[in-house]
Image (cartoon, rainbow, N blue to C red; front, side, top):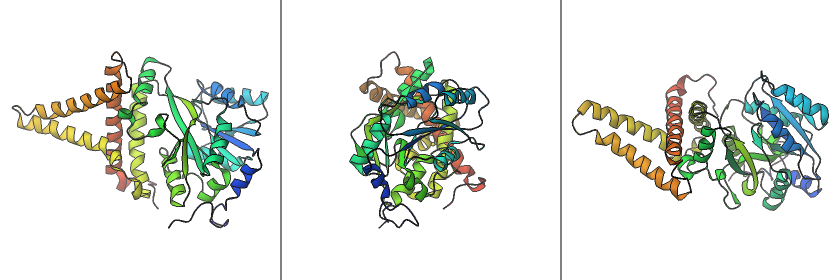
Length: 354
């Protein structure tokens, strides 16, 4: 039986004293914003954080990955007007080191992550603390509400809000409160994060899944509630979308290498579908004749399933072709990244190991 994060000795983890922090009524909170090249969004993001409707004292640490655009200047301007804001440097440039820098510098008892391209509602911190109280969980989070600021951005937002596009990731919707494997923008007691050894800095993507697996393996719980939500600005172009999901697929393989028990069948579906589609296409070219129906039939089944599912979820007929094409790109790029990760795994420099 795993030892509970709450019950373990202080020398190896927390001893449940974070619950006492909550009992004090107004525990200090640190909001950590990892960012890089976010000049289009960072101003609105920080403004939304600073307008929180909560009596709890909080600080805002912006951990910048050495941006070369106007991100740092914008943050410095906000910090000059509000002493709660501090700008920290992240020479590594990626999210995991940024979060660890922010956590180590934090003076708050609770760490709330808000990404630089997100907007949170005015009651976000209040809802986070309420979720900790009602759930007793060591991690709480909520829904990702995808938004786009371009035509393809809006299509991407629509596609990533569907079950067909995102599979079993329930936090992309607004489900019922429940304990889950992971959540979007998880918030944690600082004591718990320190006890877990913080984020694994080897992971450029999927770092939340990996951290929450370690949390759950120690008896901790992850709690989802739709009362916590954040608006997320999607990638603006299909090229950036393909790059994003190819990276997700590649890094997922390294997560499985470190934690094999995390592997689920649904994670293999995009890569499996891509392999079967390519195999049937090659077979059709090799055999000729009427074998063309193999890849065409497979693709037709995919599109039919996607169309029925998307229409059921309210996608309009006008948007349907673009949404299906976007889902196709998500699945194929993720599958290709996954297969590339499998092939490169023995040769990966610094690949994650237990």
